[in-house]
Image (cartoon, rainbow, N blue to C red; front, side, top):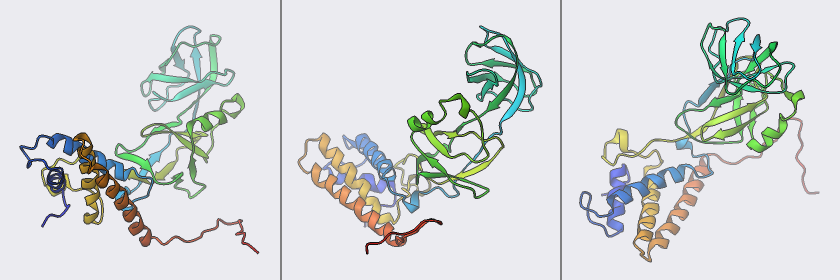
Length: 297
């Protein structure tokens, strides 16, 4: 009896339903594998917090503290010199002079050295200035796929969560020079890449944050080996959704009228999967402190 335990099981099922030959001689075997993998990630990317796809333990970001120093700049050059050699490499961090309105990125700098290189030439007046060095951009885990909620970063000191917003909204918040300051309690973060975020305001001290996310489980290898070919979808019977989606797409390629039947069945199956998970976490009304519930009188 066929179970949907591994990618190999699903591949056999897809080829059979699509009227293809068996593994090893099927004309569209590679296309079938690609559609199964695409279906796998598509299901996990659904806007639903699948319990089986949550990373455990959650991801961690430890921010770098803001630093102050003095630095000597020369107009028209991208090299500069710190007054005191920092005890860490400050490459990729940002720097600005207290009397200037331009933020630069530090392109290169080595630990315990005073010499540094900016990402562009210095535009201000040559001289020595008090400077602030900070970091507000951080990479997430390499297996990050998508966030679970907009309350994204949880500080270890149990203070207010850092909310996920759009980058355009965030850029509008710190476009003014008067807002160039850090904090111990960032308010917002935004994606600036598939797995990279920017926080605002940046942290003045080093701080730990946890974040919950749906993780990318990797690529099925279709060997039937449990360790490398088992979809994380639970219960295992629900992995049939990968077969339904892959068969539907394969039949579209073959101009087969049955394609829509399988694709519709896949949509219905995802809805059923969501209902099953919802029964495991009964929805309850929750009201934040200092808020009231308004009811119809």
